[in-house]
Amino acid sequence: MFTLKPIATVKNDRKEIADDFWGEVISVIELDSDIDERSLDGIESFSHVEVFYVFDRVSDDKVEYGARHPRNNQDWPEIGIFAQRGKNRPNKLGATIVKVLKHEGRLLTVVGLDAIDGTPVVDLKPVMKEFLPREEVFQPNWSSELMADYWK
Image (cartoon, rainbow, N blue to C red; front, side, top):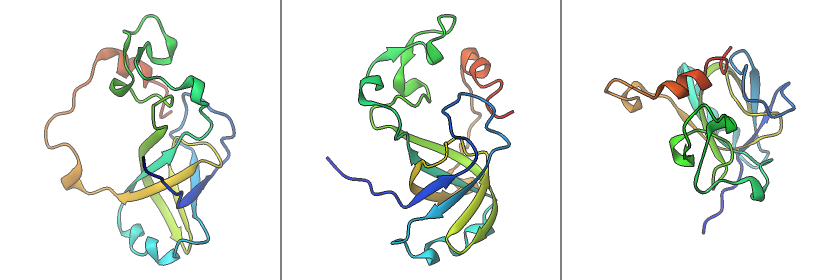
C-alpha cells in the first residue's frame, strides 16, 4: 500500500462528469497551499504538460477489475479495463497531456484537461519529445469511434 497526496486542484466550468467535448475546456491547476509555488518555475517554457489526477468521484462499487464494453456500448468489444482509458479503474488514476497557456505563481492555466472542477491533481510532468512514442501509434477502430467527439 502507498498514499498519494494531492499537490493541486483543478478549477474549471465543468461540474458534471461527461464523456465528450473536452477540447476547449480551460482549466486552472491551483497548487495546494503547502506546495512551494517555485515547484512550477520554468513550466511555461514547455508547450505541454502531462497532468496526473484522481477520479475521486468514482465510487468503489463502480470500479472495474476485469473486462467491459467501453462506455457500455455493446457494439464495441468487451475488453479489459487496462486496454481502455475509462474512469472506473482500480486505482482511479487519470492522465492527460494538455497545452500550457499561462503560469502565474501557484496557478497553471491549461486547455484540454478532461477533469471536472475540484479534481485532485497528484503530479505534473513536462512533455518532452524524447518521452513520446518513437514508433507509429496504432489503435483499434472502436477506440477512434469512441474518441470522435472527445476533443471537440
